[in-house]
Image (tube, rainbow, N blue to C red; front, side, top):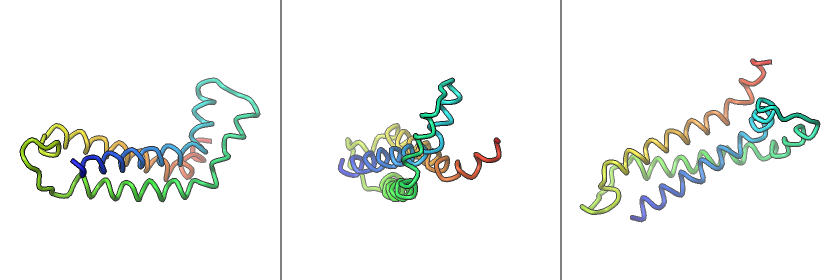
Amino acid sequence: MSDTKYSKGALAFGGLAAILASTCCLGPLVLVALGFSGAWIGNLTVLEPYRPIFIAVALTMLFFAYRRIFRPAACRPGDVCAIPQVKKTYRAVFWVVVALVLLALVYPYILPLFY
């Protein structure tokens, strides 16, 4: 039970860090795409200096989540980790979070190609 609790926490923090890492660049672009405009959108880059920290936290949490989700664990019958649907769900959420972190890593480098 504690393994799944830690893997859920690592996934949650990894996803949150990925979202925070991409807010400096992705947030203003999404607002402009939705029709919001104004000079105040330029102030949304205030989190840019913290981007490397958020990415490091996200990668660290993904490492811990990967260890908890994908390593073979000895589960007793009746434990949450013994249910195949729970394992599939954790793995699916893990890959979604990995995609978010990859987006946060490559977004500033791909963005200039669209202008």
